[in-house]
Image (cartoon, rainbow, N blue to C red; front, top):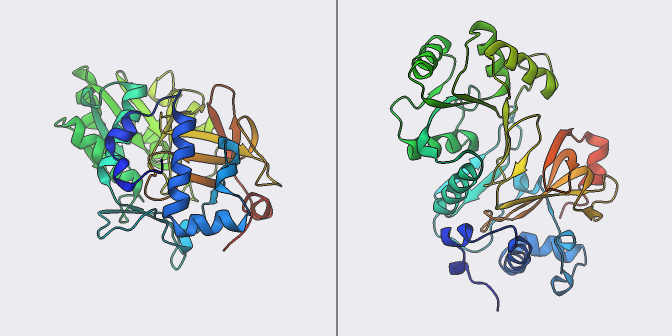
Length: 331
């Protein structure tokens, strides 16, 4: 029986399990093929017949640049309450992700966080997000805002470059034995750590990536090693998300990400984008079941490895030559 728009809501998100993931993804593929004109045109252009799609690997994955050039929506909506927009240099076209149901996003985010870290209400969230706070519609800022609102701790807050205040707040919370999650863009965490070598007891340090010319490029291993040394923590955590996704993956140590229940990562051959596997190394394809009303099947420009237990690592971005293989076509 075909799905209808009303079938997809926050309750739908909470029912997704490891056992039901593939069947749910295949049903959502049929729904999005029927209700997303862009995705239908892309699927038809590949000469893929929806009735022949029986596995996750056979689903067509929409190249992520389409979020820069098209409005990616499954269904018709009178009002779009939320829009995420990627960063970009002046004059550069940015990705736009239109979120028609914010409740679905919030449910997915909070359930995914609980899956790895327990109740959001136990944490104070301190978000060190310069560059993101300086522009509108950043998905990372909205994610932190939702976590703070759900946590409702008195010392939750955003920081641009107020390192003195952030250090004082951290020291106060550490002295009180509070559980803290310091969420930060990579270059800002490095700047803060250089100036404030604090003993971060009871604190989770989570980096979200992001150097973009702000500092000399470092590998993730180098970044984590420096932060661990300065702050005397055993592990540095990482968050994997993007403008075009509503679900997150988290690495609790060593840069090995585990996807939340609404996400699955596959890998495609760098020279043949229709050669998709459940394990291996190549370009990453993301299934995000929370992307109900946009597109749940996205071919990213990240290169990484996917393992048998569904964990994955990210090794970098494809260069212009590899893009010709990773992205098949533009409609």
